[in-house]
Every structure is written in C-alpha cells, then in structure tokens.
Amino acid sequence: MNTFRIVLLGNESVGKSALTIRLLKNYFEEKYEPTIEDIYQKKVIIDNRSYCLDILDTAGKEEYTAMTNLYIRAGEGFILVFDVDSTKSFEDIRKHREKMKKLLGENQMPMVLVGNKCDLPKPWAVNVTQAIEEAKEYGIPFIQTSAKTGMGVDDVFKTMVREIRKDREIQHEAVLHSLRKR
Image (cartoon, rainbow, N blue to C red):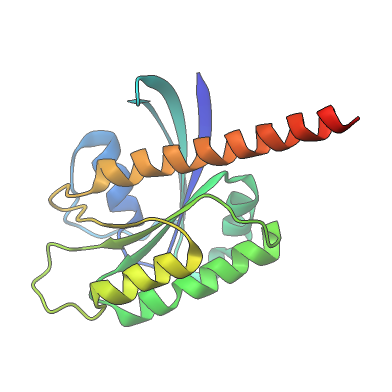
C-alpha cells in the first residue's frame, strides 16, 4: 500500500484540524482548540487503489516554526488552507509558499489551495475569483470547503492524492529517462 505524507499549512484558526477531523471521523468540533502539531493516519481507496495517508497537521502560530519546518521537509503534498472570511489568511498563503521554497527548493511540489469555511454567509472577505487566480498562478487546484458541513473535504484529499501520484509518476519517468541515456 502506498503511503503519502500530506502537510496542511495555513494560519491559525483557518480550519486545518477541522478538515482533518472531518475526513477521519466525519465530525465537526464546534469548540476551537489551537493545534500544536498532530499526525494522523487514514487508509483510503481512491480510483480503486488503496493508500495510507499520513496527515501532518501543523500549528498556525509562529512559535512552532521549527516543528512546521520539519513537517514541510517530510511532506510529499501540501494543502494550503485559508479562511474565506479572512483576507490576512489568504494573503499569508504566499508566506507559506515562500517558506516551502526556502526549505525544499524551487521545484514544483504537489499542492492544493483550499478556501475553508464556505458555510459562512456571503459576501466573504476573499473573492472566489481571487482564489482561483492565485491557484492558476501556482498551477495547482483550488477547492472550496466547509469542515462544518463536510462540503468538499473528501475532494481535497482525493485531489491531493492524485497530485502526489502524478508527481511520483513524473519523477519515475525522469529516472527511467536518465537510466536509458547511460
């Protein structure tokens, strides 16, 4: 069974843990408790294949930077989460991407941009068109979610698995290509 290490990144209280708990237990915790760092595992079947997801749920606070950096280095795919009703959380996605580039280099990593809390009344602070444009600029998928209602949560993790799988296939082909040249 393939194991994929997925890292959730985003500011504090954007819903990273809530998305993870919704996936794992199909449950939403109303009470907010800041995450320090957590690792979860979930076995899933996507496209008729079995996978084990190691989900690394990072803290959104700056004081936990060292742990977050370790998680980023260990990650294979990244879910970048912002709160649709927080302009700052959306703007800070760029900071998270810059941190990834600094730690992992310029290579394109499998990522999914997630606008969470779509159950909140509109108009939101972040226009959906802005998020779509940002995702296009990065060359990654954008998904709207609500950890509270469950909307889009499965799609995020399925899409992330497909993005990692695609990346692994590209890496595998590159290795084969270099071996053929010898």
